[in-house]
Amino acid sequence: IAEKNLSVLEIERHHLTALYQSDFMWLHCPDGYVGTSAAFEMGVAFSRNIPIYSNEKPADDVLASFVHEVPSVFMAMESLERSTS
Image (tube, rainbow, N blue to C red):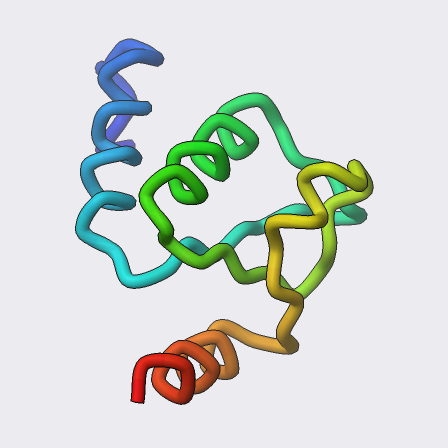
């Protein structure tokens, strides 16, 4: 509802602003599906050295190579803490 009256570009700008402020990206890719916006955001995350985590690898081998597979977002947080300490 919050994004109801926004253009696609405005929505993506909000997503990127949030991503720039994040320690990691959590990717939701049901059955391995990654849409265009998520793939774009993955590229941005990779270019900014923001780790990408998911509980499922993307079906696409190239996209999958950028994703750290963990069982939950909480495990992603723990993994990130271990890698920065």
